[in-house]
Length: 259
Image 1 (spheres, rainbow, N blue to C red):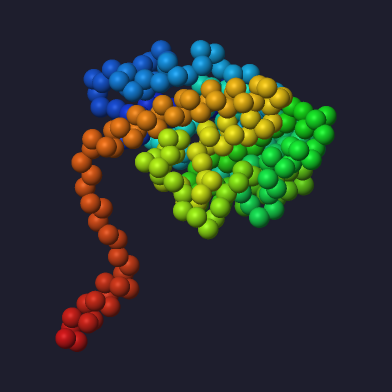
Image 2: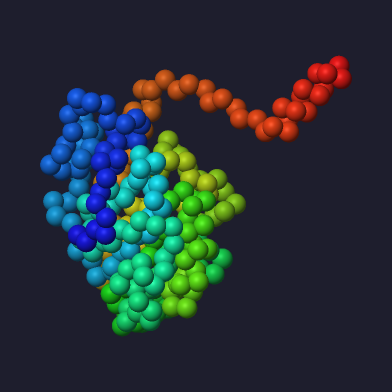
């Protein structure tokens, strides 16, 4: 596994709820999570080898401010994985994708210009899509859109925009509606970084191995979501204070004065 940055201890979360308190038993030799939510039985004993090179540009806050990040698990599942911290790709970001690349470079992001990944695989001869490089943008959806726009000046001349099916007209699922959703998604079809990579590898890997790789990764994600869902079901949730805009508050104050 080729990591371009060290995994931070900030990823040691209790299924995504609260930071690990002092004294809690941690699985230091394996997944790095609290022992009672250890995922080692679900993680492959050795990272999976793929013909696809997966490059993840992750927002600098993706790990430190997002305890639900699936990147630490993804890093333990794949051998041919490169994680790049930053908010845009440029020629100096990584030697993996110097334009023009000898291998197809696929930018997986649901942009208007993106074609369906499955359709691209069907229409492209095997020789033209062998050993591809899969680019993933990881962050909140707002961050990912900004990262996509900032990286396009470099990527637009050689990267092939592709996407998984997303329906922007339908609300996305939550973890209580899907066993693979880590947090509430904005639209139907939006998935976590780990699930997106798993679905893409099913299509990109040589026939026969893609489905097995996908199922192995999905099994890890399914276990993580089960731990998180169980935790939330037994947690007393405080009502969130409704945020109001200043102009609304000012209008209410004026109405009171006029009354």
